[in-house]
Image (cartoon, rainbow, N blue to C red; front, side, top):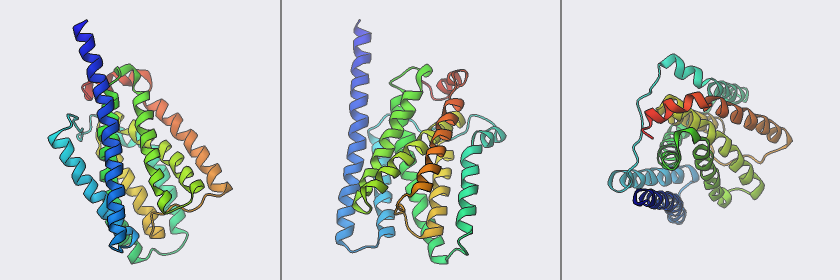
Length: 259
């Protein structure tokens, strides 16, 4: 009974700590945003500084306070890693084709992508797939990894409500749903490959292509076509997540992540 009570205490504290870190990091980013706006910096340099400083704070928390390991070395062969990543790689190819049809990329937009995308990908994936997902995983048994995937992805999607400062409500809600679906897929890929590098690389590639093509991280207002396409993409992502995290794979996941 004493051991059970201790486990419940650890569970409660872990949930509280996870939510505290999430809210704290959002608060820090909002504070930095206000400060940088007052310095009259343009949008993209602000994004680099916001996410870069947030990454430093998160790294400090992970090193000095949070007891959550990050997994970098893949647990499967490279051909199997590519097989698991077929859907996002196909999507990136489609996105690249769409951007290329608009015409040649400008040097300024390409440099913007190279400056912004790596910092955003490193920070967001370390926080949501590295710390938050693993925290939720340790609150459940290996046979029940799906709630951890969905809860961490929900927090990832809700974090984009901060973009209301730069875009309207319908566009922001569309982005919340889009990033929730993408977050579940990145989480499943992380669990199956065992390496945080895959979500980081995929996240970087996605943001870089968009930035190189448009020069901005501000979401374009959705229309009937983009909403319909995203709805289909969302269903495909969820189906892929359920396939990647099917029951017979969960024991291997638990072993690698020391659950």
